Structures are given as C-alpha cells and as structure tokens.
Image (cartoon, rainbow, N blue to C red; front, side, top):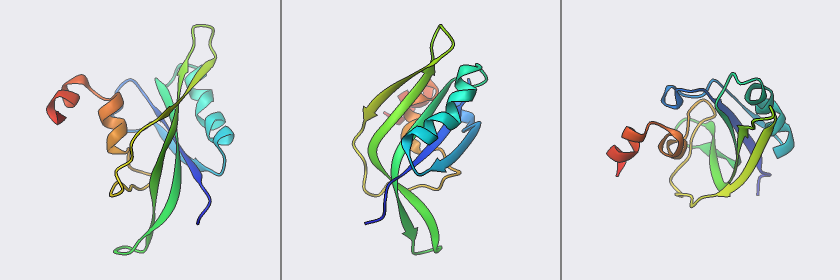
Length: 120
C-alpha cells in the first residue's frame, strides 16, 4: 500500500474557473500551511486539502490520485485567520484525477449554483 498524500488547491471567487493554485504534500499540516497564506490575506475564497493515494494510469503511465473521502476546507475568519473544517464524502472508485484538474466533486460542491441544478 502506498502512503497517503495530500493535495491542496486554493479557489478564488470564480470557483468554476479552476484553482488559483495547487500542489501536493506528504502531510496535512504542510498542505494546510501552503494554502492558508492566501486564504488569510483574502486573495482566495477557500482552500481545500484532500487526502489521496497515488495510482498509476495504465493507459498513459502517469501518476493519478484517488481520493480517500477525507478532506478539509479552510475559510477566512473575520479576525483574519483560517478556520479548518474536517469533512468526509463518499468516494466513487472510478474517480481518479491529475493534480492539475479540479475534481468534479469540488466543482459540484463549491461551484456555481446553476451548475449544481444542471447536474441534478
């Protein structure tokens, strides 16, 4: 079993435009620190840190990531800090993604309300 990793991305006011920044870290605390600076200065709307395991794409021999269902959402507080909320979700085993993609579940949860209605 490969060790877990944490993908982070920061999303601006237009969540549908994709992440304003993203990366990968070996532990949750490091991933949170990466996005926290931008959340605290108000340049982005929120930071999402998702626990993932790496997978190898057989068709392209490239690294992809599979979410474990555990993630954290960081939002700016009124006092200028960041509040982190631990959350879980059900994972579709077929859902894998590259680090440069915004996962579909994020777009559905944090995106445009009109897009949510169109998805059902």
